[in-house]
Length: 449
Image (tube, rainbow, N blue to C red; front, side, top):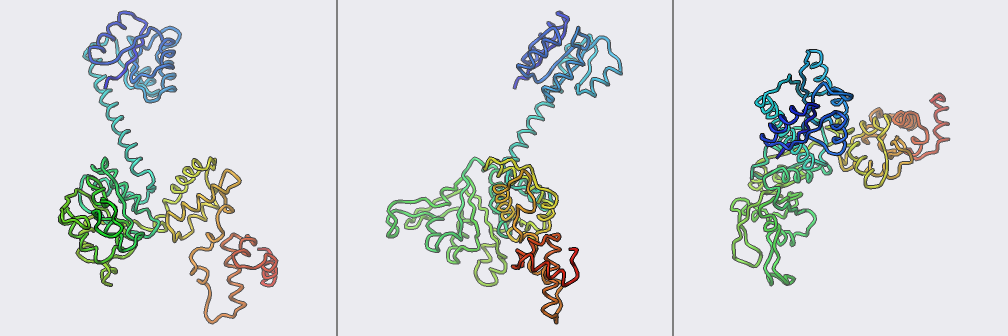
């Protein structure tokens, strides 16, 4: 890549010398004779590097530096002067200059410093490409918690491996997103990413979907059909909810993993494939094995690299990031302009136990964004059930034996506490009227609540 350099010096001989030196070193070079000319051309065309004199009429090198950094903060700016001082050099560096050179500048000095600059620019470019690449791969996996950072690190560390991966976690924790990230971070990213949901197909169709079939292999086989293993050749096959795979097919899957070959239904021809398998499960597979529903040898073949995704209530520090991500997502999808959530609503989201994990949070944010009347989400934009927490929380203060009226009193007061004294919401959840709550509070001598 050729880097572009703008030379700014009101001395014609210096200008010619610099242009000749830079072109000989392989740079695209443009020269001007004043700060005004430099600023005019920079407003039309950006340069990677600016090499400018300090002392120029009207628009000097320091003023030009300020203007160029305002237009393009990433541009590398180098100042040259025959009237150098420590104070001027410090000022230039503080304003964003890369270096400060004293004239006369030797060709080897120019070449040396620009070599350093181009190495820095290359590194920045590579890092930016890597950052954008990783952002694309992990675009929907949001988190800064320790457990999520460990997942990100593991995904990158296994990128070049062919080993099978087992992703476990409750429904809604993002298992498929992690599987996709594994594929698109790997050296198979140019290959296909094929998915089979083992729980979504009838038992008699799973084998045909996995291995394919020949024309006439069974009554409805009107033509030869390639299975998911063939389609995934050179890429990744995601076996979603592997625990639901029929027991009789598990031995066939084990053989394919071991031998890397299989036969279509109705054919004796062996087909070799190069496929990386990623499996997911929301079940405890060891319990499934103990119950005789899953092969132990298949489990160990799949569980070479285990990844566990913890439930959202174990990584609540990620909730603000997720909320921001989903608000941005649904703003774009629904032409909305929600700026965020207020503190009370965020407190509500942070306290909730999230049985449906990230998927539940996503659904609630989508509904809130779509139905919100203001540009910031409040408690009123979320269902009242969020404030109640797990069902067991409502019974935590009940003691047996307890009279019915005492239990009613506890439940009313506890519900009001959950809703920060909001009688309307408490009444809605309890299935009674607001007047009933007021009457009961008066009876309990809590008329100020």
